[in-house]
Length: 319
Figure 1 (cartoon, rainbow, N blue to C red):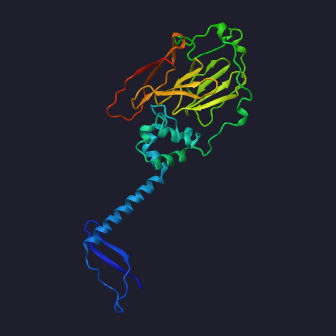
Figure 2 (cartoon, rainbow, N blue to C red; figure 1 turned 60 degrees about the horizontal axis):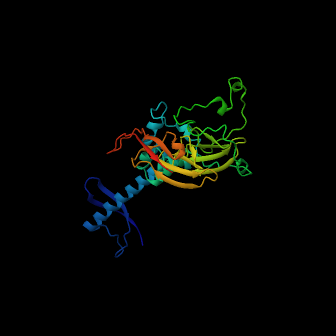
Figure 3 (cartoon, helix red, strand yellow; figure 1 turned 180 degrees about the horizontal axis):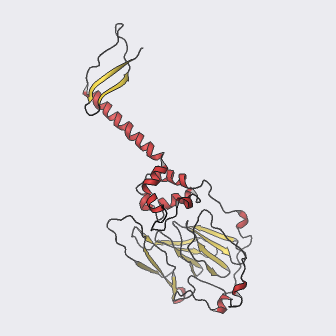
């Protein structure tokens, strides 16, 4: 079998003449010089070409994460942005899993929803690091937690009025001893570059949340780790502890109750179905811990969301 270039004319009036390699078997020792016009062949070629262009465009978009970031993300992550989004150099210090979580379940979910799963992963992997920064075994406590005296507690915002006031007796500090404070231990949140939540200190344990949704229970004296819980989104509130439970909310409007000793989930609920609902305020305990309230609000994202309003809301529960 031998081959020859054969021209197909007038198949695509807009594009003009198309030259294509066509397999032409010899007939009687001569090439087949003319291919009879066939509308079916014409339509098949048009559809095939369109499919090729669509596939190539899709592959090109999936393989160009830098271009995707520039077109979809850079306006919020540029220097001097008005939404407080981290700069690209900050994102490059995070794990790609954390970046992906922000696009799929975090504050950037409205942007991520307009991207395919392949595009979200491509952007995340082009920005974040490959390492997940697991907690080293040496960070974990070797003994079970010991219940400490109630003095020195700092539960949530410290008092029922949310003034963050601590008496000198409760804090164990005076004007004379405060300047003598020295660092005793430090704890770094793996895989994140920002921390907003204020720690609560209750019964000799520290409870604190991180930007990636991790909630930690630490020993107040040594800083060793008792347990970790992974919430669905970032936690920037000060947890409240009562009834043997740890109460807190996340940046997707979810409310949690964990066992204070083990970190096991007791229950989880959503405070409001608003698509941009977030919880950034710490819970307030009332009636001796039998009821608590969460101040919450909608997320100030720059993209408009149809059929929604920037309503503020509060929720209350009785455990």
